[in-house]
Image (cartoon, rainbow, N blue to C red; front, side):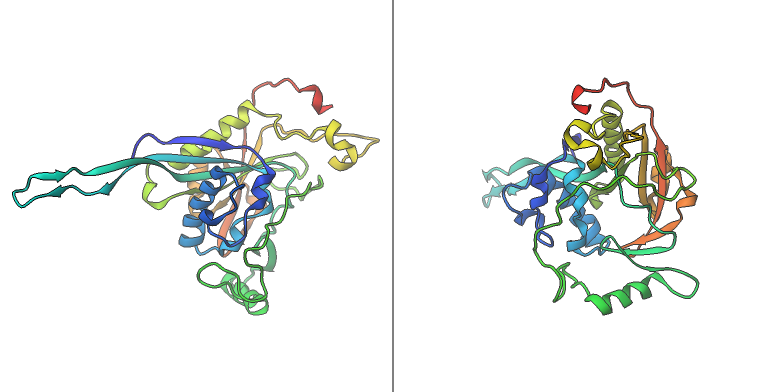
Length: 306
């Protein structure tokens, strides 16, 4: 594997043309190639490895997020050498070097949906039950599937559900007061890292660390990127009180909904577990909330923000 490099795709509505449940290499031509590369990695890790239904892997946040993809240069033999009976080379071996996507991460801007419920079991972004002493996560999911249809093993939805329909379009979310946790007061704007994934054969080479650091470094240099523009949106669209306007502004708070098995990785990168957020399950996988407070570079606010 050659030295990996990282590419960035900033938010674009072209991503909303992505088709649910359709493989990354069968998408419409106008969907950005870099995003399809990100989905290639996500399909391999979340869908094929972890069993997340393919139609649940894409969501409305994708079109409003920044996406990073790590590529590696891979040398592959396309034609083996041909030798004669005396072992003389008749035709030499031919190989090509190709850049392939091996990892991805995204940054989702504020505002966000409310913090997940402690003990909540979520499926396709929806709360379908609460785990307690008398219920298990698999039982809650089985009950939901029995009532709503069970995804097929190939990731396509069962009868009555969507298959290859248009994905949900990202619409402006209202700025809300959330429940407070140990590390979040319920009001401060934060960005969220997510969909961190590395192709199995490339793990152990710190690819995940490269991706996280690339995203954090970009945030550090562009702290005002996601701050809303009053000029473009207006106070009402932003959701602030005109009589007491407090304009949402990002001040370096970063959140991650971490799968239990990778909490240690995030801790090494400076994130802390928010015990007050609790534990919940997404597509049957246990998650913990974590936060990091970053120092950001001073950035002049452009006049378009006012």
